[in-house]
Amino acid sequence: MKFTSVRKMAVELDLEGVARRLGTLAWSTAERRAYFEYAPEFLAAPLLVSPFHLIAEPGVRPAPRDPFDGLHGLFNDSLPDGWGRLLLDRRLRKAGIDHHMLTPLDRLSAVGQGGMGALAYRPELAEEGRGDGDLDWFVEQVEMIQGNMDTADIDALQGAQGGSAGARPKIMIGFDRGRDSFVIDYGQALAPGEERWIVKSRSAEDPAGIGAEEQAYALMARAAGLRMAETHLFHTRKGNRLFATKRFDRTPGGRLHMHTASGLLNASHREASVNYAMLHKLTLLMTRDSGEVLEMFRRMAFNVYARNRDDHAKNHAFLMGADGLWRLSPAYDLTFSAGPGGEHSADVAGEGRAPGTAHMLKVAEAASISPRIAKTVIDEGRAVIARWRDFADEAGLAAARRSELDRLLNG
Image 1 (cartoon, rainbow, N blue to C red):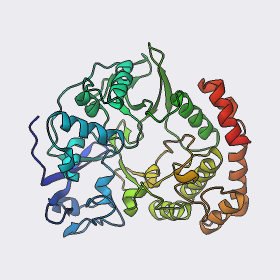
Image 2: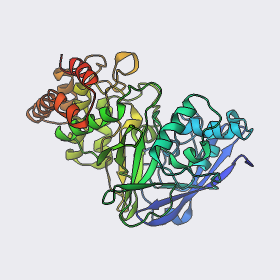
Image 3: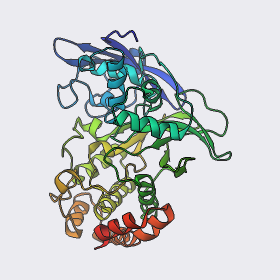
């Protein structure tokens, strides 16, 4: 692989089928940070793609040095971390390139046009290979990567992960439910009937049945009234069960712009940088919709009772279409999580270890949600969690893990 470090790149906004030049992103080696300037043609008809720290106005905008290694929060949202970062580092190391020398712009060039949301980056790191379209292949390659085996098809895996964030191994597929078939999605045009989905595999730290466990959580979240994308549990020929979810940043009309709370607020997701009071306020500022604020409250109550303490700033996001209006994205990455140090990443009225009704009602009061409505949402959430065994059985979770989580969730 021939590799040349990127010093300047064009950023495009490909929003619901209409691609526009957003601006130019440049890297200062001396300052170890990026500069961004909106394109004049975008400023002629601007959208608030990042309404707090990168307002659409003339001028060159330096990125803060922290917390994203000298990159603006808007563009940091495009960067994969965890699995995607590991794959790129392995790919370059295999080619004899020192990945420690990469700048954030180099990593964005690897994202190219295939990232989450509506942003695309040029120049684009060339693809080197493609996999054979089999989910058992995906699982086997993941195991090779985690075992540091050099025989893994790193190029194909890196091309198929689509800039997805999070620690869990993922690939993108085009799923045809009518035919119960799929192809690996490298960003190519899909055939009629194929929809863009994300498939997750198990990481080295996950319990054996994590696919069924996440599916059980998705069923439970829907029953609790949370807005969720469609989900599916793939059963492979070799007995693997892989959780999959339909991509909510892709529609039949094209891509939607996605911005996480982390990117919007320039807040690190690697530490406790936001709390639920801030998330409710952010939701109101972004959407101007009390219904969306109530949706955030419902998610908070679910996370408290479902013990999903991995509720950091990158696990809350907003979507924008061509009309420029924002709404909360569907909830995602919902699983049992002990959290950092046994606490929620986002505290509830100052309590991270054992938040209860009183703490949630304080958040509700600050968010102008009436006590009556807040108590109803809390009671509904608690009642749904009490039915954990039903959702676990429907998802096919092993009895031992079902009982273990039942003790943790329901006492």
